[in-house]
Each structure stands twice: as structure tokens, then as C-alpha cells.
Image (cartoon, rainbow, N blue to C red):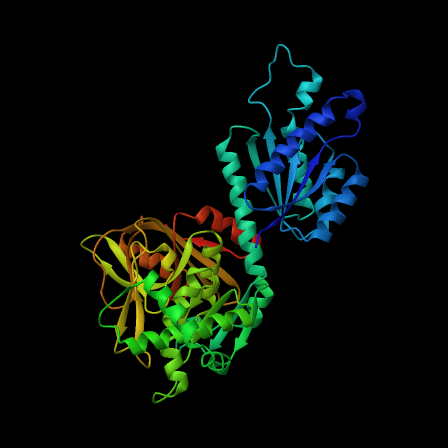
Length: 465
């Protein structure tokens, strides 16, 4: 899924007969903008160069018809705000005003009026900003150079990548299988809130929906899933073959569940009872959900719907997004151990992930195979999605570093993460933001893009640093 980016340039029709070569020159600059943005894996909806109020209304209709996620207003030269405001006024999409000067500086000895007009993008940016602010248009400004300005273009790319992630969130279908882990009050979610604030669709699933898809998994499909597991994981010798085969068969059923309900993510938990069918299913989900997560369908255990969405956000930003919680603080080496049992995002593993056999799932019923790994060493981002006292969604994020070193060999994902704050102070500040006790863990530093994603989704972001 890619974002749909509306692009329009602005100019003043009165200039064209006065300076015959100016319009084509500015249109060339606009093509440069559109080509660069297209390179950010976005679909471009171009309204061309808008130079009259009538053209502005036509551009507005185009952007509404194409349901654009973000509008880029390329300020090619001076234009009156009366021909800019109508383009964006009826759209719900936020606007990025691009004040990108084609040359680094004018040649003051030789430049004529035409040359100045080809470089005077800054002239009307304050006017546009004033009118957008008074009209309550959601806008941001990026100033810099059209060419050879990595800072400006990195900012534009971040907005475009964030728009793609926002579109994915607004159009996602998250399966809710079973129920939330009993007693974890921080994770309870209002499905209507998810629909209303994010646009995400929550598909309520029964364990029966999975149960009816597992038995048809034939020997050939199960063998293929087993082969995939052997390709991806290092299989601990202690894994009972019957447990691995059952997990592979359930993984085939999960693939069918995701396909049949067109799922973009899955949150799940079910206890079952006395070794019954649902307990056996619930205990065998880790392998299949890990493989789903690795291919971009994040699976969040314990019924944490909010964290599934945080994992989806990080995944769509290209960071991964692994199911994580706080494990322990290391005061000798100054890091926080973070991880979780259940599925992880093995695409961001530091080494080949391990499948271990667990005769006991702590705090859960049943037994079976579980995944163990730590994320790649280097920069990381954690992201949580929580709910405030007034029912509003809120993002919490922090950047840190994944460190090399030993981890717990307990069949869980866990990583040694160091943040700019000392472990105790970091946990204090994180906790004071009212988080869910789970979060998503991804590789790379992404708070810049996450801030833009939060702005596009119209939810606040608290940065812990």
C-alpha cells in the first residue's frame, strides 16, 4: 500500500505574457519535485501549475476525487493566496508547503526580474501560512533548495513515508481472536475508539474461525510449513517433533485465517481448558504468528489490540515492530532488558532465531514451541500506543541502541536496550506517560517520521528522552 500524494505548483497568470519563458521553466521545476516524490514509493496526483482561482477549484476537485493522503504545495513563484486556499480548503488532507529555491543565490549583478521571479518562492510563503492558519488548514512548511539539499528532501521524504504508514493504519483490518488476557486492565480497548480515531477496522474473530481452518491443512501444506520453519529457525534439539508438526499445521490455518478475512494484523489470546481443542490451538500459535509478523501481518499476543497497531505502524515505516515489554533493568551495564514470549519480528533478528520447546508457558495454559532471538545491534525505536483518561489515543516513543551480549535462554525474544537516560530514570519517565505495558520494538531511529505519522493521524506523541 502506498500513499496518494497530491502535488500542485503555484504561479500568477499575470506573469506569463510579461515573461514568456517563465511558465515552462517553473513547470520543469515542478516535474523535478514530482519525480523526487515518486521515488519515495508514492503515487502522484498532479494538478499541474495552478495560476488562477478557477484552476484552484479544479485542483481541489481532483484531490477530493482521488482521496489524497497529503498535499504538496510547491511554491514555484509568487501567487496570491486566493488561488491557493481553495485547492486545500475542502480536503481533509494536511498540506506541506514546499519553499524550495532553484538556485543557492541570485547573481545580483546580472539577474533580471524574470530570474528573480523564478527564484522568489519565499515571497508568498508567509502570506500562504497566514491564510492557512486563519482558515484552520493543517499545514507545515519545508524551506530549502530544490537541488542539492539533503536536509530539506529528507524532511519531505519523511512526510511522504509517514503518509504511507498513515494510509495503512486508516485502511487496515485487524483481527481480534479470542479475548484480552484477564486482568490486564491497561490493554482493554474500545473497538469503536479504534474505528473513530484511526479509521482502522477491527474484525472480531472466534476461535472456531481458526479451528475450522486447521484440520484441512493437509500433509503437503504442513510439510511445506515445516520446511519453511527449518529454513528460518535453528530448531533446538529439545523440541518434540509432534509439537513442531502441530505448530506447523496451525500455522497453515493461520495463513488461511489471515487470507480469508483480509487481515493486516492479528491480536489474540485464549486460555482453553483441560487440554481441550482451543487450549491446544492457543498453545500452538507462536510459530505461525511469528511467520505472519515477519511478512508484514503483525501479531500481538495477550489480546493487546493497541500494541498490534503500534507494531503495524513501525512495520509500515520499515522498522519491523516486534512484540515487547520491559523485562529487567541492568544497573551494572546500564541497559534495559526488553522482550516477550510469543511471536517476534524475526526479520529484524540479530542472528538466526531459535525455536525452543517449552514444557510450560509461564502465566498461560499449554506447552509447545516458542521463539527466541534478540534484535539487531545498533539504533532502535520503541513505540507504544495507549489510551488517556478521556478516551483519546496517544503514542509514546523513544530511541535507543540494541547492545550485543548474552540474553535469557528461556524461549522468549529479549534484547539489551540502552537509552539516553539511565535505566531507572527512563522507566520512570516512560511510566509517567501512562503506557500500555507492551510496546513495539523496531530497528533504526524513527521518532522524526513517527512524529509526522502522529500529526497525520491527529493523535499526540510523547517522546521519552
